[in-house]
Image (cartoon, rainbow, N blue to C red; front, top):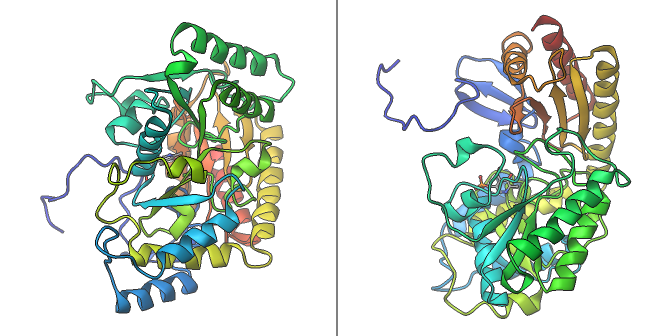
Length: 421
Ligand SMILES: Cc1ncc(COP(=O)(O)O)c(C=O)c1O
């Protein structure tokens, strides 16, 4: 063991495990241990670790071409992937741009919205997370830790209310907080960022880093309605919710909204760094040639991995498994919640489920969550992660290929951790 690490210490670490192999929902360490990975590497390995079809696609593409730079020449997977994405994304999404990470794609989506509308400002919603680059950080409001020490951030970002966010509760459509939050958005457009200066609303249908809190249907539809009325673009950030995670290919399918721009990453290529911006053709067509780009976007191996991933996700029964496992998980967690008052609530959509932990005065208990995560890892060899401004949400984001036994193993580990912390 070396006594000095040559790695930057900036990464926050959930565990010190060194993994050497992954398969499906399991990872194996250099110490010869097996762990159930309910983090999916932060909601990425949709098809599980090293799905054979994805591995095969990457390996055979690597034999042909590793890098085929899009400005220099085209390659034979760019169009097929765009065509495939067109078939799985909402009908309003017609044309695609490729990049490498979620942050790059959210930032690119804002560049596109500004070019198309010729307007400067953007509205985000409490609890948002859109990435780590400067514009993406400016649009991230889930924790100061993501922003502190990096100020000043780009201006022109306004923060509107997410119903139930401060209370840490998923809010139903008829809850008065939905209308209050929409009224606040109206106020923001009157008092802070006029529609004539607002290019876009950017919204996660289910807050990711913000704590797996789904936007109420009536709220997201109210936001979309206002966007349309005011000529403001609706950018839906599906970096974490996309590609089957919520039991549908995209989370917006649970809502009656048509995104103008859709941002995708994480589950898109099963872990190969790849992201995409999809938009109405009319919007993409007005992005001036050369005003955006990147060396690696549209990388052939990423395209091959994405095509194979989509093939797996669209296999018969794949999304049914997501919905069945989601039902099993929710039922198990709700049963635990009934027996234990330290569970604040269980919420989410599909295999994106958050459980909040509270203390005896119902205040968020982030410390307990940290202890539970450590307990599950040490005693049950199950990996969980936290989320949310107060760090008191345990998030469940298993690979979408997770089976019934593995969900039960996760529930048992969770229960044991509750009992012993
Ligand atoms: C909703 C959302 N948008 C953007 C990002 C940023 O993605 P990346 O970490 O790939 O830059 C994330 C990452 O967690 C995310 O959850």
